[in-house]
Image 1: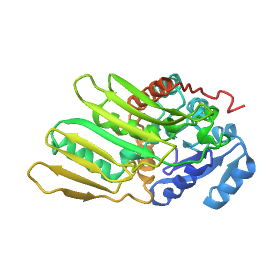
Image 2: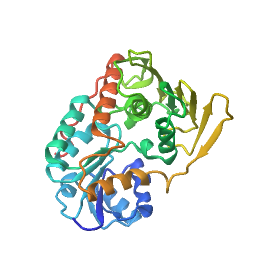
Image 3: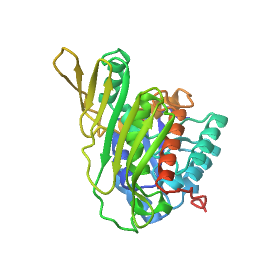
Image 4: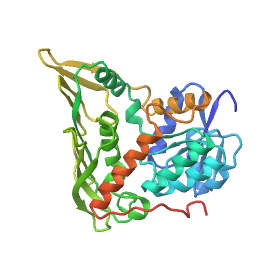
Length: 332
């Protein structure tokens, strides 16, 4: 491996457009290649972002010996097959959220990652935001006592279009896998994995989930109340309640700059921690350093947490009548 960690992008879509720009502020890492199932789309992405190579198939980038890490940003059901093939090719991975479309799919990828010893991480950038890091440090120091409850919401208004990925079940459409992953991962980060999830919501005509309210039950009185939607906009705020105070994570909580600490008998304390670049840099740095140091996973976004979150999302989806499936044909 070269001293510079060389990245490839799999799936040059909307999120990849944003993420790749943050390599400009990441030391020791560079995006060098991109793969799409459209050669023209790959060529266009490579030209606009200064990448060396553009491939018109995913298999080609898997075979590129000069790529150390793959950032996988295809639709959710395609992550599973691509990740398995990448691990067999010895490529480290940063896989967009949600990690896969199904719990068995996530488990299979994680099992192979552990078997091969190759670094894999879910791209949950929230956990790496400086403001969220500051919040976790305050909580660890006992600033609000024992955390007993979490509230979080994230929703956007999207006009229904059955041809759009967001509403197409075959492409992992629906609010839960796209936005619900943020609220669930945030709660799981702070409270751990609950005993059960209870879900209520509605569906689009395509069968994809339009909105969902989730209650995470920890069986010891601790709870998380979470809301997500593609039907209507939500503030994107989170609150963490403890026995000695609470913390507001100001909108939008999944990439915040500011938190407000409330403690009994004290004035509110506003803490601002802006991100480096657009905020994707922090997860890129985590993977780059992990790969360089020979680690297998992240301490901040461990694979056990990824699997727990995936299971909660799938349990909630099934309660709404939604069943996702992986796409095994993506590499054919």
